[in-house]
Length: 170
Image (cartoon, rainbow, N blue to C red; front, side, top):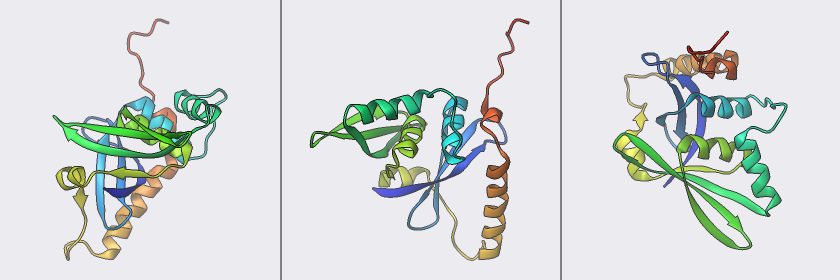
């Protein structure tokens, strides 16, 4: 199991599907996880320190756990099965830990709010991570790409992850 850091949220250029990008705390391996628009907005809101006027689902869940005297200890991306990632949220209460099945996107949104560490199973990293290393990519090239991505993150808003309903009545 390796600790992961949230590197950012972006869009798949082909399908316009949101992606949360996790990076290994040690090394240059990146784990892209395709997620839904609402979860992307929830992650992005917290990354940008934005606060909704009323508690959103992940804020509510975090507040509920706190009121019950429980805390999120960690979340773990546990496996990739049939092109679907699986995760677990580890919650501690009264000296006991319980594991709760979760979608990675919801687990990550909750981990940010609880300031809990994020992990990925070694097998998930081996199967799905992208590694940037070797002589092909110079430090300057990597920094240029990181700079472009950070610029995107600085300018993207949660509203850009809203899904428009084509069947909306006027």
